[in-house]
Every structure is written in structure tokens, then in C-alpha cells.
Length: 299
Image 1 (cartoon, rainbow, N blue to C red):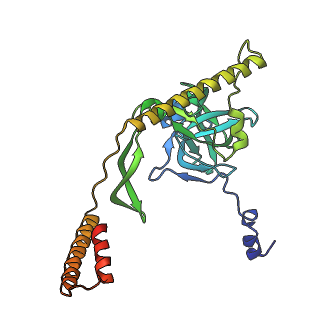
Image 2 (cartoon, helix red, strand yellow):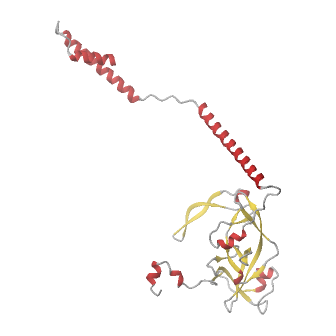
Image 3 (cartoon, helix red, strand yellow):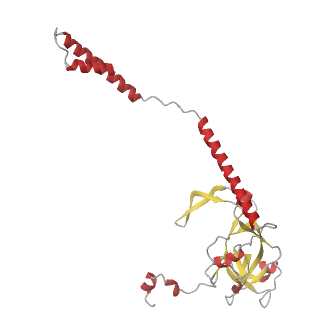
């Protein structure tokens, strides 16, 4: 295991990598700020420091124990693994002297009914319910998407293309969520930390007052209706094709030119052979005359 090349060959380099859990990046060009100016103080959370006048540092990025990176405005799963909760991160605070993590301000979210056509539950934030969580309380980062189908978001060519770390004048398409940007859906299809995400699936209730036979009968009836709809659609398509008249084919100019040329050659050849045959009185017609007469008949 001490052979570095062997570990790379066996794809085992992660065994000796140092964990990046707890590493953070401070907000650029911002120094220490008093506690009473933080969002935690605005939410009425008690200061864990010795005095409210003590200063704290804010982070723009934090790495969790499983390697996920979270930031303010991102969503996380926290609590117990069997019954996790979902919340949105608002603030990440660090002690300015000890450089230790003070906590993360999280807004709890409520998972509502599933939204079509995504089949993902709506993730609604609970107002005035912020809580300060420790590093150990956060399980993983979760993915959310905007409810574009309901609000009619469209693609626009407004994003500048970044090439070799330089912003160019070229544009690429992006979706601007200008209508209800906070209407988020929990993405239950993410593969990372799927064991935790799967427990957030809503359990679909069984239909009331329906036996197994009734559900089978309803499924068969739905299938018949669907087949009937498909057959009608195919019949309408075939009827439209039959009503369309066939467009007359355009004459080929090359064929017409070839026919005129062949006719001229045959007629000129007939005149030559006829004059030759007449010049010899009483002679038997030669094979050339018979062939040319046949050519004239064919023409």
C-alpha cells in the first residue's frame, strides 16, 4: 500500500487522501463583523460567544464530512438519517480567533405534494423558524430545481461564455427564473447520498374503497381507452395522407433531348441508305437499309 503507482493503478488513491471535512472559504474582502449585524442576530438567536459585541467571520463555502460543498442559499439535509429534514442555508459563521466553526443558520423547509410533470415534492420554506445547527447536524447537500413548468420559464441568450477564465462577448442560453424564483422542488433523482434522499420520498396512499379486482378492472378500462385514442389518431393521419393529391412529375429535359437526338440520327441515316439503294437499280436491299428502316419504325 506504500507504492503510489500501485494505488493509482488500482484506483485506490482516495485511501490516503486527507479529509477535507470542515474546510471553509471566507467571504472575499470582508473582515470580522459584530454579532449583532449577522442574520442569526436578526432571527433572534442567542449569541454563543462571550459577548454580543464580539466579532465573527462569515464563510462563502464549507465542505461537509462526505465531501459535499455547501454555501448560503443552498439546501441541505440535516437531523437523523432515518428521518432527515430539509432546510436552506442562510449563513455560515466562524470564530475569528480560534478559526473554529460556530454554526450554520438554516431555514427549515416543508415538503408538500408532488408537482407534475416532475413528480417532485414542493420544498416550501417555513417563515420565522431559523435554527443554528452544528457541523455534525448536517448530513449532506441536496439538489433543488425551479418549478419552470408552472411559471413558464423560457430560454434566453443572455449568459456570457467564459473561455480560458475570460468573459467573452459570445452568449449562450440560460433560464432566468424571474417569476417566483423561490418556488423550488426537491430533486429526488440525485445519485449522490441517495440512501438519505430515498427516505424523503412521499409514500403514495392506496386508493380508498377499492379492492384489487376493482383496480385491475380500472387499469384494463384505461388501457382500452388509450388504445382507442391511438387508433383514432392513426386513422386521421392516414386519411390526411390519402386526401393529399400526388404532384405531377416534372419532365426530364435530358430524356427529351436524347429522344430528339435519336430521331434526327435515325432519319438522316434512312436518307443516306435510301439514296444508296436507289442508285443501284434492281439490287437487293442490303442489311443496312433493313436496319435503318427498323430504326425509323422504332423511332
